[in-house]
Image (cartoon, rainbow, N blue to C red; front, side, top):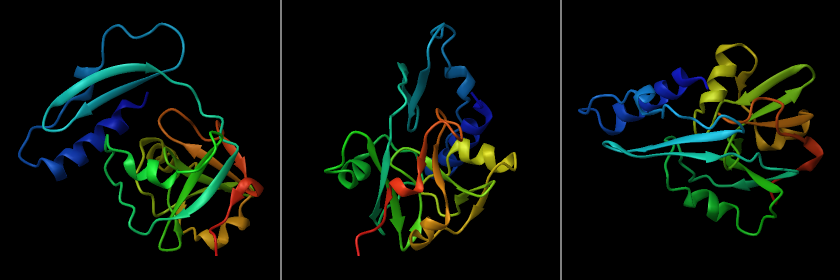
Amino acid sequence: MHLEYHQRRVNATRSELFPRLPQLTLHEWVPEALPPTGLHKLRIVYGRAVEKVEIVPYHRRAVKSLVCIAADEADYRFKWEDRSLFSRLMTDLGSDQDIIVVRNGYVTDSSYANLALQQGDRWVTPDTPLLAGTARQRLLDAGLITAVPVRAADLRRYSRVSLINAMNDIGDIVIPIQAVHPLDS
């Protein structure tokens, strides 16, 4: 879904990491036979060339609470296959918990999704994401969310947090702000 947004991110990533190589054309790597039922994630792993293409069943996580974790050094501006940063930050969390990465006092993302925060009838997204996700960009382009600075200290100004990514639209996974655990002081 929304292949043009994935294509833009691949182009930007490869332009920065491999400026002398030709762009990949993602639609050429989408298998002709996709599973006829169920929700599946298409994963294309690439570097200088496409390394593997896989289709795996997708199961939406049942996230019930979020824990703010300070990680000023966190850098995930490219969608790396190596996710050890998040594994390290999520040590000791329950299976129904995820994190909100806080960098230099500002809210960024969860371990696998960008954030949308509800304030009244308005949805905003932090203007400091770790990864400029495709769903986030699509929602920004559609005017459904607005990028604003969000300090961790100001999270209580919002009523709910929605985890958004290519597999989860705004409203699919929603956590009430009361279930967001602030930074340890």
